Length: 203
Image 1 (cartoon, rainbow, N blue to C red):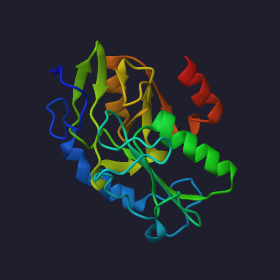
Image 2: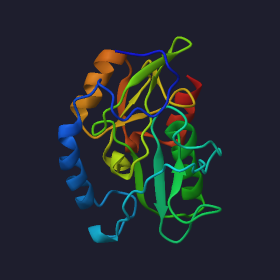
Image 3: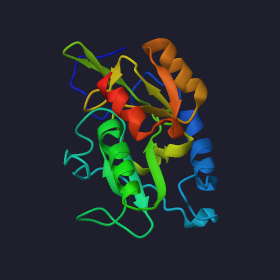
């Protein structure tokens, strides 16, 4: 099922059976308050935005959508990334979103919403290049889900745009199925600490 072309956005791949869960996941998203200091009223929670159009990663400057793997975005209550309004946006989680989130949390920035690619609701594809396997990237607003509610696959044989990454699924069964097929294990958002991430990237 894998092709040999370079990793690029492939939103209509044949490897998934997830389209049926999209409406349910999007409906649930609006009701989630999260655990990031978000206000008690769900309507205060900003919606994810489309990350296409040549946006550059706020952590490393890479253009989002040109590389494989999950993307992410973070909205802040009283702060904004340098050079543009909220949200801060990222083309990788392991080297972009999470390091940025941890660094700015230490600086006192309060996140009101964190979103990541939800591979349970997109028709993702896998591709191979140079013997490595990559997962497709997705930038449309509706492809993002609440990062705090995801189950993340780590240590699998599938890479993101910058190598090892965390591959998010809103469905535990989808995450477990991915592990069964591609190896690795699962972690939750709360499991991902600066110390854990440092060890993961060194392993």
